[in-house]
Every structure is written in structure tokens, then in C-alpha cells.
Length: 191
Image (cartoon, rainbow, N blue to C red; front, side, top):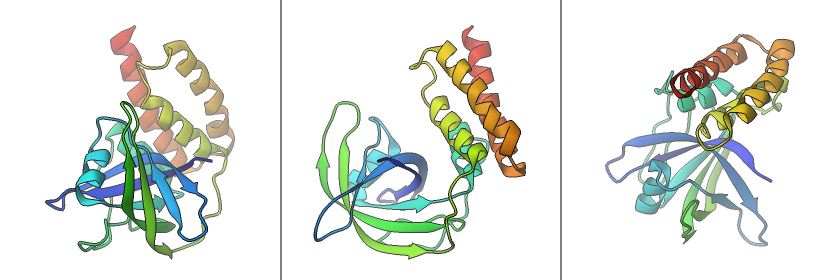
């Protein structure tokens, strides 16, 4: 199972990078492990290989996913951090500080196995409603522009819009608009 999260990393100069990503939990008897599989090339991959640390943020504010993939909002409030941990988002529901213990190279998506060294629950995560799910799915699709058939993206966007129309609040509508704008600009420039 893949969990859609926000991963925060730092480079050796303490510059923070924030990226939406899918992670997997691995079964083990003795340790809680997370697999992070960033695409090549990526700043997330570079940072984890360089510093061996990352933070996995479970968050229900889909504007964070949307803002990052579209560039509409880049500055997210972070908690203070130290050399042992990458920062977590202030508005995260739960965060896990992780340490890379293995990396398995791959030409497209290396697998980095991380041990959870700290976990904090800040507030309950009540799950996603249909609109939030729609925003996350469209955010993922927006990162695949040019790799997935344009008509498939248009069809998926139409279908996902149903969840927005029926269940979205203000945050979800704004997040959707940011991604819709990015996709429409892509189509205008590539039709």
C-alpha cells in the first residue's frame, strides 16, 4: 500500500526541500521501516543520499500537495530542526523522522529504506473526503504531464471534478484551481 505524504529533506547546507510523494511501510519484527522511492533526478533523492535523513509528514491539508506541484505556494511553515532530523511541517497531522539505512539504486526510482527514529501525532487524521482525494489524484496526474496521454488526463480530470463539485470546501476548491490552471497552461502550450 502506498501512502500519499509530504517528505521534507535537507541538504548538507541545511537548505530544506519539500515534496509530495508516495511511501510504503515495510513489515519487520524489530523495526518500523519506511520505503521512499523518489524519481531520478530529484532533490529529495540527492538530499537523502547526502544527509541520510528525511521527515514523512501525514497531512490532511491538500493545499500543501497542490501548492508544491504547481508552485503556487512554496513557503510552508516548518518546525525548528537539528542535525539529526529534517524539519516537519507545522500543520502536519503526524510526522515521522526517518534515517536512511539502505539504498537500492534503480535507473528510474531508487528505493531508500529508512528506519523511523521518532514519531509524533499532533492532531487526529480523520481521512480524506472525495474532494481531497480528487485534489491529490489530480496533483499526481499534473506531475505526469507529457508522460501520460493528454486525453487520459482530460478524462481523469473530468471524473475527479465530480468529487470537487459535490464535497469540496474552500481549501479544496482553491487547491483544485491551482492544479487545473497548471494543466490548462500545459494543454494550451502543447495542443
